[in-house]
Amino acid sequence: MSEAFWKTTPLSQMSPEQWESLCDGCGKCCLAKLEDEDSGEIYWTSVGCRLFDAEACRCHDYENRFAKVADCVRLTPDNVKTISWLPATCAYRLIAEREDLYWWHPLVSGDPMTVHEAGISIRGRVEALEDELDEPEAYFPYILEEEP
Image (cartoon, rainbow, N blue to C red; front, side):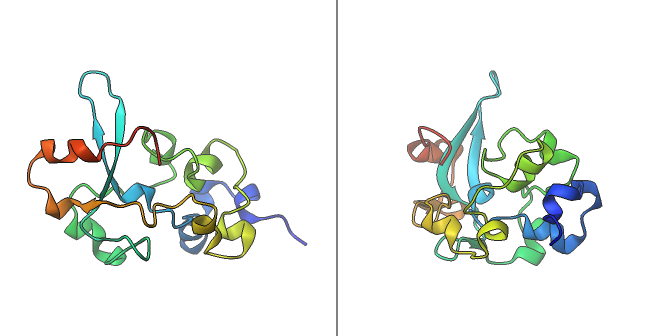
């Protein structure tokens, strides 16, 4: 039996299908994050992107997300090494740091539900969507104590 592709294939050489399969479906990328302009510190919120389906823990319009959401970030083999807000559990970050995937990752478990069952996803924890908030200050009540 051959070794898992994420252990043998560099991010830059993965096929589009391999790359997409690294996403565990946690939804954390789709949460609004605030950055302190002075310190650079990132504050996680419980506010989801306007395209985020909080029940399914997926984007409503994944194929068109960059056209519809100006600040949606396209992950690439180069930028996953430098994006400070990628979750500690993110497969892209883990592979870039030469770490292995967690047991609950669908590629390891074989089940897309384990990320939810393990409590890693944000399913059930989104309290608002960004299109419901008008001013930056409106995000403050939704700031989380730590990364979800």
